[in-house]
Length: 136
Image: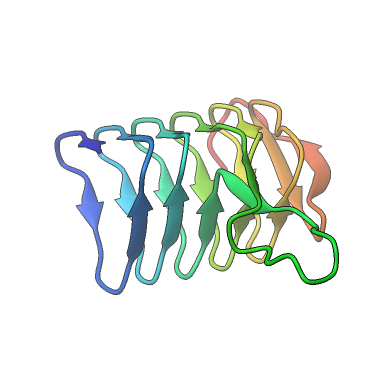
């Protein structure tokens, strides 16, 4: 686990790190974050991850009847870019990339890549609009 300078790791977070976790500089990991890193998770500089969000680079697989699913897992890296804002209760699934300067609305479930400078929302998350270069 590597954490950059001036990163704010707030209380009540749960971090399961068995892989390569890289947190950039100036990042905010808000209260109650659940982060599961079995393979690789990267969070870029200046990104804000909202309260009670979940980031997981692994998932459980279906198994035949009588076979426990606990150890039947698959992994895929998560790459969260720079200067991103994620609202509260966001879920980021394994194998996704969130592009630089994106906004992820509260409660969104990200199961596909998010293009840079796009606002996404919903379950599953979908593109709402491209974000302008000027500050709102």
